Amino acid sequence: KFRVQAANAYGWGAVSPSSEAMLVAALPDTPDDGSSPHVPPPLCLAPSELVVAETEVPRLTWLPPTCSPILGYRLLVQTGCLGDFEPWPELLSGDANEFGELAGLNMNNTWLSFQLQAQGLAGFGVVSATTTPLWFGVPSGGDKSDNA
Image (tube, rainbow, N blue to C red):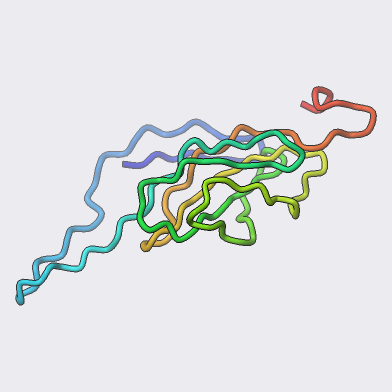
């Protein structure tokens, strides 16, 4: 099953109803020699409980999905609450469940949102839920409540 949601300059639209379940691919037949058929590895599910701490430099934590092995994570970053999520330039370690080295990110008076994907043997898996947008930076003479 799947659902669709569109985004434009004004934000996200409503999520469509779920589609009907469909068979995407059938398992291969058993080879004539009696050996096991090659079954591709499943995609990783989405990491859960992705949280960003509101500190001077964002610190993210998450629970890894049930996927083995996890080869790494792709961090996706959105600035300003609109637009595409851009991939962080480096993959995060597959052993990690936190990341706080976003010093290269432009955090000068902007809203930031994050998503995460685990990479397994079948490639990148399902994207996590988006974190709540957080404001980073305060203009001189103001506070973040002036900009919300």
